Every structure is written in C-alpha cells, then in structure tokens.
Image 1 (cartoon, helix red, strand yellow):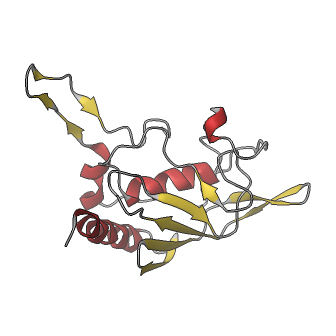
Image 2 (cartoon, helix red, strand yellow):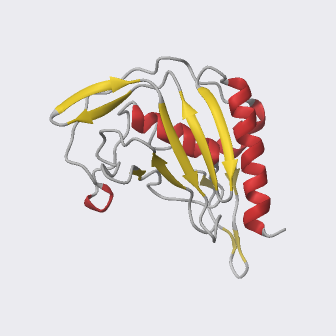
Length: 180
C-alpha cells in the first residue's frame, strides 16, 4: 500500500469519526476511488439563481485526492456551486487552502468548507477569486463537534529540525488559522 492509499484510509477513519459525532450535519458519506463525497445538512450557504441569492441548508461536496496526495492538497467541489468568491460558479471547485501543509486532513477540509459556506472566511487574493459576489455571513444552524481523535490533527504543533543547524522555531499547523 502506497503513502496516498494509507493516508486516504486514515482520512476515511477521521471522516467516519466526524460523521459519528455530527450525524445531523454529516448526513451521508461515501467513498469511491480517489474521492469522498459528503452530504452536509443544516449547513447554510448562499446559492445564486440568476441575479438573486437565496440560502439553502443542504449541500453535497466531493473531496478529491490527487495522485500525489499528501504532497498535493485535497480538492473540494460543490456538486451544486454556492455563491462565494472562492467557489467556481461552473465547476463548483472551492479553493480550500490558503497555505496547504501535508499534515492537513479531511477534518480541516470539512471545517474550512463549512466556514466558506457560512461566508465567515474568504480569500480575496486575485489568484483565489472565482466569483465577484459578496455575501453576508450566515450563522451555523447546528454546532459542529470535533471528536477527540480528530483534535490532535488540528491542533498539533510540530518542531522541525534542520540537519545542519539544529532546531528551527516551533511552527503551528495553520489549518484553521484564518477561520478563527
């Protein structure tokens, strides 16, 4: 089993734990070759219909694992695109990562996706903008629980060492730094 397959198996276990803790929000998860599909309920997001915006609370997101994962990040796609500056209105691609790190997981992706859906975060760097829409922030309809077995992944602090000069300063996992 290669690194990608091992990590995907670990990611699936994290997603199952997250689903068990949030059955009303993560209504359904499915796994196929190279992707996980998640049905998010009670997760409001703006939907564009012509020039009008309205809120829907159920959305399906595909999380696609590239061939060279974890060196390359998980890609997210809304099956029905939402109205958000970081979501492609045609393909549903959602720009999840401001600065991706290989330690980030499906838990990070789901939390960032929900923050994007509620318009709590947006990356206005031109390289990340795909729509020229500004939506008002939406409250989460349901509180989201992150199980204990998923927390160390989100909150880990690692020390890295250089072979020649000793320790580098402590670095945070920045998965949620721009959400909070």
